[in-house]
Length: 222
Figure 1 (cartoon, rainbow, N blue to C red):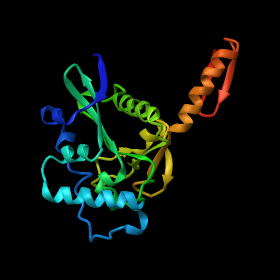
Figure 2 (figure 1 turned 135 degrees about the horizontal axis):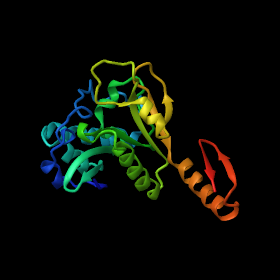
Figure 3 (figure 1 turned 120 degrees about the horizontal axis):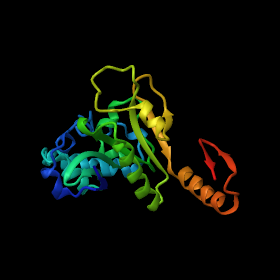
Figure 4 (figure 1 turned 90 degrees about the vertical axis):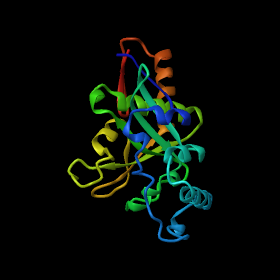
């Protein structure tokens, strides 16, 4: 099988046979009042969140359509024309459910990952990692410094089954930014990836081919 990762457009969503296209998990949250969490938010995010909330009230269906209109993005991985998985990401105010977690709020300057999902028939093929890498490449080009996501510890068997396991995230370069016994906030520093990439180019240019050089988190055999 040959898989291709690419951005999903709004008009494609209704044609996709995947549960994320109709899932409301990250968008279903009742705010207590207009000033809910005001003290924790950047003012721009607060105002955008208010507009987003008003749009949510006017149109309760087509959640992802509204999400994309307000700047949210969806990356999909495809087996020919069949969508095998998707990753939903954007500014954290686009995911009202984040307010339900103790680690709220994510950092203002980061991009937040809501859903990272791969269909059961395609698991074990590295598609989750491919989705992450595709988003990382896109954000690095846009000079975004970091990605954040709320993960789930493996021992937690409670209802939040849609969250990504912490162990998988750490394996893919994330670290715990705000700790919690059940649902920590994890972060991936994209600027460090760029520095490592630049260092690798220097190593290729100047080091002997048979030399082994240790670099934090990885090594190079040349």
